[in-house]
Picture 1: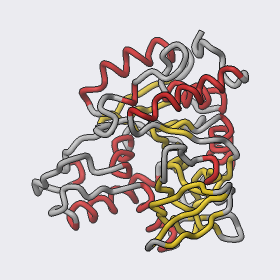
Picture 2 (picture 1 turned 90 degrees about the vertical axis):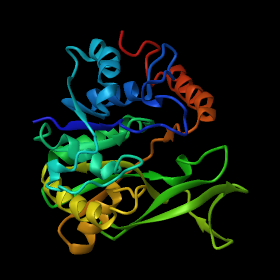
Picture 3 (picture 1 turned 180 degrees about the vertical axis):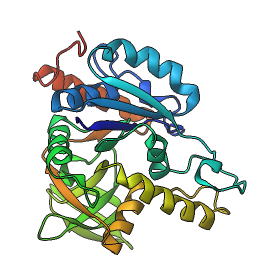
Length: 299
């Protein structure tokens, strides 16, 4: 059974100012999602499931169905504010969605095979998809999951400091913890993070999480239980978010599951602000120029 690609695309994109999930970045208006799906098909994924807001569905179908028809099975699930589906009868006010870990619960009724989760607005590269397929096919169990580890030096921005989840890895290559470094930047051909006004060096190949996770469907029951606890504990915090790393931290801490940190040498890039668009376009144009992708991706 081929693994499934689960794409997180329900974000509000408030900092970008429009629906960056379906904005065009390639030479013929291709979205970042197009390149992820193209790589996923070539790597061996069998289905893509889009996690979106329900009002996005017509836009997504009009963009992706003509391209993927005959190439890959597609499905659409909706992230919403309905807590009754999780047995929570209490009304809890929210200013924004509950976060990425809550989002993957939207796929629990349609995903029955090993799967990976990615962001819609991040470019990951073929190598990462191929290594994830191999893991999901050959190594994944209900207690052995994975995360793709990117070299921090290949994830930085030309436009200033970034936040990165630095992976602490044990001798067996498994995740011990993810340490959020909120101010990471290059300086004098080196990489540093800043904490309490002091600089600390990081090696170029330090593994970091860019939200590319591999699971089996067993994670849905685990996540639902954790989400109910999180929602009730944060009912008076309308901006609190339930992120995927919280699942990883809980499972590693309790010993219920391990996460293999699968290294990739791919360069990562993504889009948060409108100002990122020219850089992303240039990066994709370079990949087209060097033959990584055809100019017309779906021709």
